[in-house]
Image (cartoon, rainbow, N blue to C red; front, side):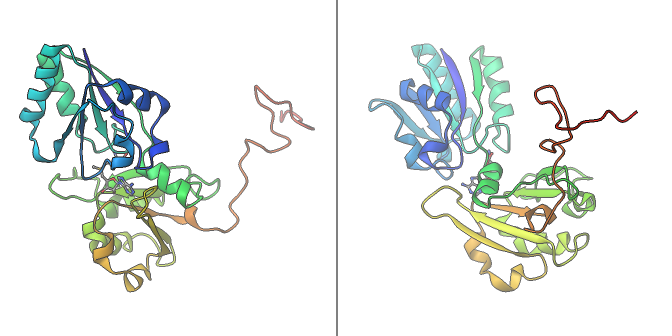
Length: 257
Ligand SMILES: C[S@@+](CC[C@H](N)C(=O)[O-])C[C@H]1O[C@@H](n2cnc3c(N)ncnc32)[C@H](O)[C@@H]1O
């Protein structure tokens, strides 16, 4: 018996991995967060699977499900939205499983930040603009450690992908404006890959005048940075004709001695 932590992806039925879907098709017990994992993905579950929405369960109650499944020798698929390594509270579950002597495995998923970048057709690491992506959130019920305040992270000028921050958009934008110029691009992506998907592209200086804050409170990915601009960044060295690497000879490459 094993517990499989499975990344469900951002919501679309075809954005879960093949491995994740295959495990779901077999699992007799499935736990999922109903607020984030949409029914489209649950469609993979077998007809007689026991489906448990974790919304109403605390950690102890979830562990009781794991223990009961272990006693019955039944594998458990534990679905998490996006990728389970990001804001999914998997570490505490894993600690409990270790203590219970229950084996577990993690299956990665398409995170909402990569799905949002895809929806925007954006490359988040553009040469000459930034080579860094910061995944972060503003403090909510879970505090953010000192040194990770948005205004501090913003000093890098990197692309920021900001999770769990829809309810704080106005203060978030104010904090970002302490470091980024007002013309810096920002994109709000609500429920990416789901039927309700909505995208708003703007600049830090204008965005708050253009949106109704309440419409972006839940399940919104916020991406900020110059990499979102459609201007001409430098081209990467990867495909430059004169650049040779292990798998390609240079067209007219002369070693620089
Ligand atoms: C508890 S975190 C889970 C993140 C998830 N593990 C991931 O990799 O995307 C929930 C936050 O992720 C973002 N999110 C999750 N699914 C999303 C979606 N389909 N569209 C936009 N943002 C999403 C939102 O910022 C939301 O507040």
